[in-house]
Image (tube, rainbow over all chains, first blue to last red; front, side):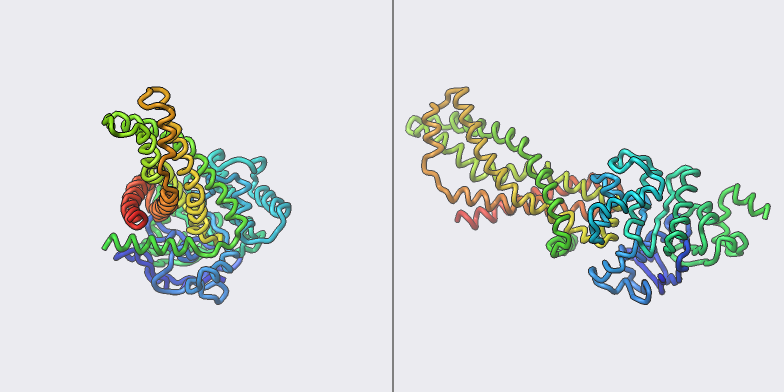
Length: 250
Length: 246
């Protein structure tokens, strides 16, 4: 179970996160939504320990994660998979080496076992015959899928995705969304996804948190989002003409 | 105050870099890659520059010492000592600061802005140690070899210039390069090389590791890495010379 309690984060005098508290639903896809610059990525990075919040606590299974030292954090990080916005694949390593990396760091598996795991993960995200290609040789959509394969390599209990379908065409974006949802359900992972894509919200968002100017403004399910009277959330959700038409129809 | 901030952060980074490595096998692989990138790939430029500089030092010494009372073998001696004392350690370090330093800063800077360093941290890797320690060790171990190559090739370049121009006889030049040889000069050059190798890799890594922003900042960090590495090298050149030769 992941919980954030009263998280606040400053960069200099700028307050980026202001007293955010949330309990994420276990074994489901939790979405953090908000417009660019609202603090979603900073919040996600606080949750995984890349930023230390000045105030508040990040709790994994009753352990206060942000108060732990590096080696104690490493134990929790063994349970975390992270898919970064741009994939963050290592340029100098092949697809296979990228996925082997967390296995080398976290497991004592034999090389053959690791290779089996790599191929299983790649097959799961529908990538074949790309083991020996470098990140520069594959498409944006493939990079995201390899990043997802790398994130799931160590059989994580928690999967974090930062804008997994940004920069992708709508069809590929749906493929990535569906993969995240399927993997979450199949392996009973608690997944937290940062996005500003309303299609993702409607497709995969079991629980949705809306962040606006560093504060949590709203929390609910993807069905409730269409009927909320929260002004800021409505402005975000129904920003484009298509969404406005949908709202009229509803 | 800004200077103290950077000095403090630099030493904090070094503290992280020299933390005990966890997966030594992975570090060893990385170390061998850096030996290739930082060391072996620099041999070419060191050989080319040292050959020509050796030749130029020889010619300049010859054309500026036309006094008949000065023995001709001093040209060889001048070439040898110039290379050992200053060129092959300091000048090569400045050249490597440009070649290796900018490469390190842009590599780490790109990894930072594309979140590859964050990805390492998430995997529980001490990214500073994993990325920077092999670079420092590779340079500290391999650069003395580069200096030795530079000295040897430089003297050879001087001899080629002698053969090509006849400014001094080959015998006089060879006698000069063996005359009044002080072995401590080699030790002095090696000590300087080790310090400079550490400066190049650590200062450049510092500038790359803490990049924030995009490609423009990566470019700027690369430039800063070269400038600050060069300044620190020159500063330590004075300090080490005073300490070792006084």
